[in-house]
Image 1 (spheres, rainbow, N blue to C red):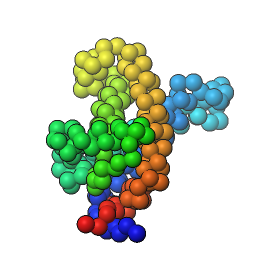
Image 2 (image 1 turned 180 degrees about the horizontal axis):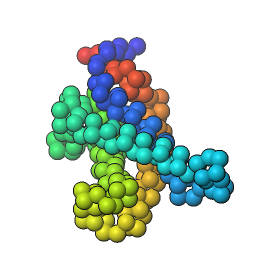
Image 3 (image 1 turned 60 degrees about the vertical axis):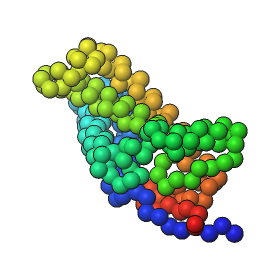
Image 4 (image 1 turned 90 degrees about the vertical axis):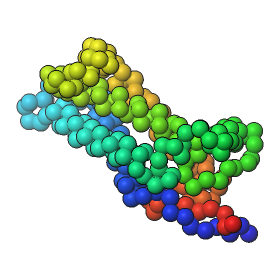
Length: 214
């Protein structure tokens, strides 16, 4: 029987980022769909209830939570522990490049070999990094639409997107990426937990993962 030992993996700040990010996406997507295409009778708006105003308010609160989560992740990419820093997920070392190819082979069911590591595998890390940059575009496009008269957001918005309509289009397209990412992320977390008893899912609650005892 294999023997495992506990290793601290994720800081409280990383776990806080994860849940702020995940929950804000749920609220942003739900309210975003409503803002784009209301499914209630908008004739009641301004009479005895304010469904659109309420949805927009929730959307804005979730957007600020989302932005704070991204700021936390940026801080951890630079100042986090060894598993949380950006260099741990970049394929710039022999070990990381090897892990990337081994993960691709394992996910493709070509190989059963598993490269055990405390942090993210490189494929996951790159997906998270891409999502991080997508989130920055989401934030800039969102605040550009919210504050078109503010010189700061207007400056960045015009530089990156040009018109507000194009910013709205990018904002909508990126929303689909976050939904697709969430489905794949949950599936692979469950898949990994069934394949390797490392405590991947529980680690986002406890900060602890398990490795084979040397």
